[in-house]
Length: 159
Picture 1 (cartoon, rainbow, N blue to C red):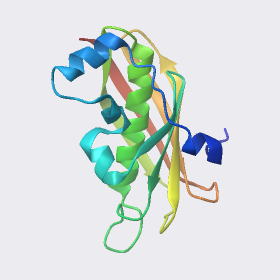
Picture 2: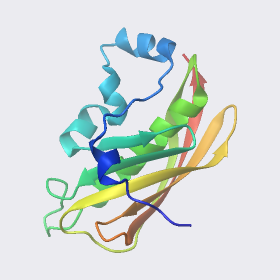
Picture 3: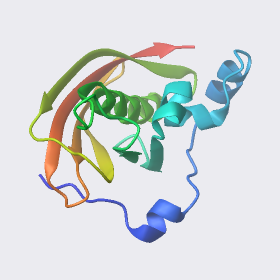
């Protein structure tokens, strides 16, 4: 399996998530802005940006700087947050109108470290059912080397 980082044009283009209106309305009642589908307040703090999104594949980026542990390496929890964000957005888009997704299982394996630059996560559908969806998320560094492999399963629920 290969992962591709977004092109410069894709990274600069505004994202249009095709979020069902009833999902937006439901979360608007809770004070949630549509931009939070890129990770909410945690995603904002970590500078997670979704650059491509569908129920089959979601691509996002996150800077290493500001998301490091005390030794200067990308924090493993930051990689996990990126993975869960991307997989959850994909599952929510797959779930469709009147439904939303919640993560129920996350597995993260760290292969190598990143100390600078931007990491890119690509969430790819493994299983898309009626009540659950599973995604494999590959996180790579600026050179395209895989640094983390993740698997996320989300439960799909009615609003």
